[in-house]
Image 1 (cartoon, rainbow, N blue to C red):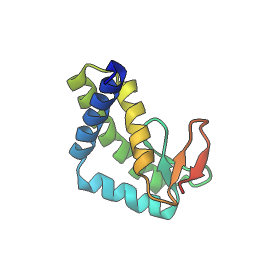
Image 2 (cartoon, rainbow, N blue to C red):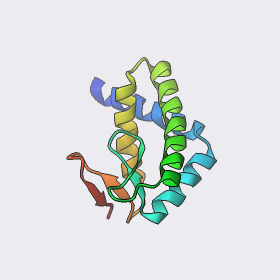
Image 3 (cartoon, rainbow, N blue to C red):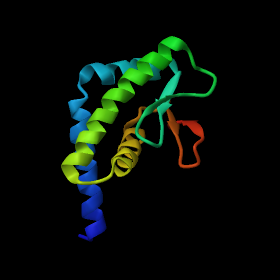
Length: 116
């Protein structure tokens, strides 16, 4: 297996382990927000409000969830010796991949689309 593929797999595993550390409450909260259509998974591994849906309550919940994600990503970066940016990129790809049909996701061009 090429070295780059092993690197990507190790990053993905680190992110997955970090995401497990987030706990069920954060992910349950993100699911509720996604169900409203107000938020989606951004390309950088964080939850984000979709254009035109900002509100104080939603922003506060998104900030709290993202703070937990950032802590998990920072732990994964420290554990693997990789940059936070690398971890965020891998996490973003994984979270968009795992998003449910109909969820908002940010594509590579930065546009918000509904996942099919």
